[in-house]
Amino acid sequence: MGESGELEKIAADIRSCTLCRLHEARKQAVPGEGPPGARILLLGEAPGEQEDRAGRPFVGRAGKLLDRALRDAGLRRWELFITNVVKCRPPGNRDPRPDEMEACRPYLLRQIEFVDPRVIVTLGAFGLRSLLGIRGGLEEHRGRLLEFDGRPVVATYHPAAVRFGKARRRALVEDLRRAAEIAWRD
Ligand code: SF4
Image (cartoon, rainbow, N blue to C red; front, side, top):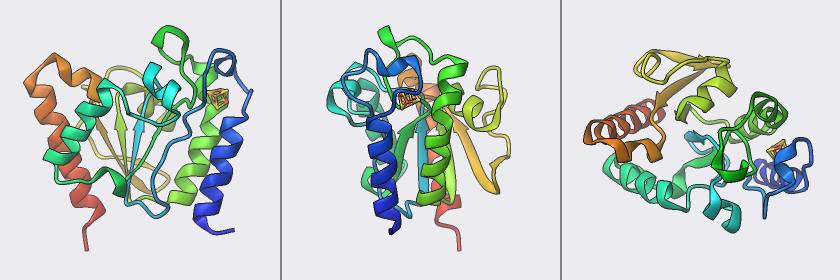
């Protein structure tokens, strides 16, 4: 099976998954999307209401903000693999709980293995927590040299957070540009 087939298999496993309580209220799971071999993997937190309805990541309001930031950073969405820490919507958009992130983590690890990105960008604090076990606020880790399994990790704001100020919006675009530089180095 090629990488594309493997990613489809992972998506099918996610769509039928009942490993944590989040499957109970979902309309549909949101496995993520993008090509195998994408140089950048974007890791958000959890599907929201519109993503739950569409079965696709970042299609709601935060998705529009992400699309704009990607454009400003010179990136094209279809070149990237985009997924979340948990693949099913937490009721009322509450934060994902530690046991839910733990249950969902193997899917993320399989996606990272088969996409094989050159750089991972975590959007918001939960990506850092799930991937690297890092707790605490994003601010203290943003700009630091982070690594997961030999791959650079760029920690930045969740697009939903950039509604709270131009400085954050600029920082998100800057971080995406930095990720692109790493991804297309050589
Ligand atoms: Fe399974 Fe992840 Fe959905 Fe929980 S959030 S039911 S572990 S796919």
